[in-house]
Length: 293
Image 1 (tube, rainbow, N blue to C red):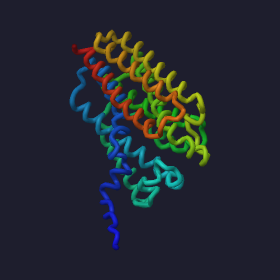
Image 2 (cartoon, helix red, strand yellow):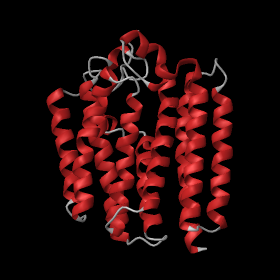
Image 3 (cartoon, rainbow, N blue to C red):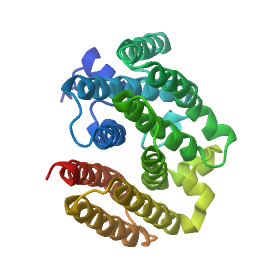
Image 4 (cartoon, helix red, strand yellow):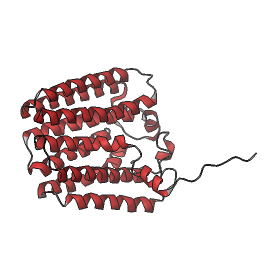
């Protein structure tokens, strides 16, 4: 009896997987802090042109970061259950092709950045070595997710300055909240890879925090909520914002109690990560409503 093999994956689909555009959660979760920034900086009324630049800029930047990460990890990913089917790990794409795609992504991001003011453009340039250096941090720094969180924080700084031309006190509260939030949800993501990372000698915040990872995530989410509360008070946001902040804190608390289970199935970690996209959009709605309603 003949067995029917699956047809080969079209090249464009393989490229979409390399860019992670087949998994929108990771792309949206970078876009969210950037949208927070432009809506808060403009009191809920950013120009459409700026929204489009930020949306497409974050898509291009996150795509470039994913490709750079996979280039660094192409010999490690085949040994990790979650990443072994990635295009470079499975040799579905060549290194040369991936480098070209990364360069195109960076060029697209740069092409959008030139429409920003000089301060935003300078911050965009400053973010590049942080993005490129994150995969290296996994090899030399005990909490590499902190490097990723700082890279995420640049989305706030770039977007805020793109909207109003300067950094303000509220910018730093939002930046701090973004860094803590990112470190929290990316630690959750890393918890599913902890055994593989330990075996391969790769650093992660989940390994660094060890048995206290759930408590660390809880503290990080609590810190996020506190900084967002200070931000709302500083900007004198209306009750709609406070309602969404309270709801977000309740959802983060629920995630914390889930993480306390030492036998949590691995797919739940990814689900918690994805659920933070929804929390981010809830907060975005509150930020817009906090000014306009």
